[in-house]
Length: 106
Ligand SMILES: [Zn+2]
Image 1 (cartoon, rainbow, N blue to C red):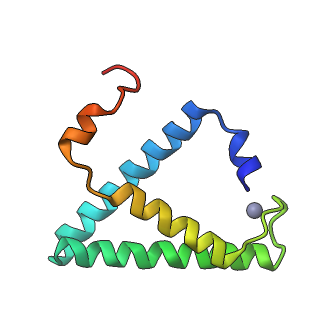
Image 2: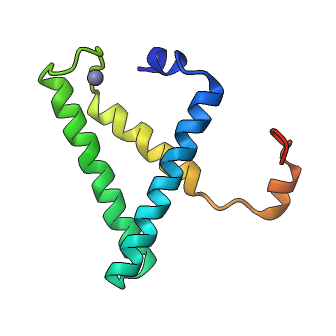
């Protein structure tokens, strides 16, 4: 799977990430407004939805219904996803963020 990710350039991955971030933020805001639930309750539902998405895509590939060649390795895949979630969600102290090199310009 990593080889397939490399066919996308860095800018293309950033664009895809930004698009997914925007769509998920809109879904989160809508769910929060409609449900009246607390933010963590909505995030828990979103995490459940993401896990379900993984399961459905993995099942689809295990049944060889997709020609892309990805072969799910559920235990490894789930560890990778957990690591990505943890890294993205971890709070970083402001002084550490200020020490990071700037990437790009605003
Ligand atoms: Zn596929």
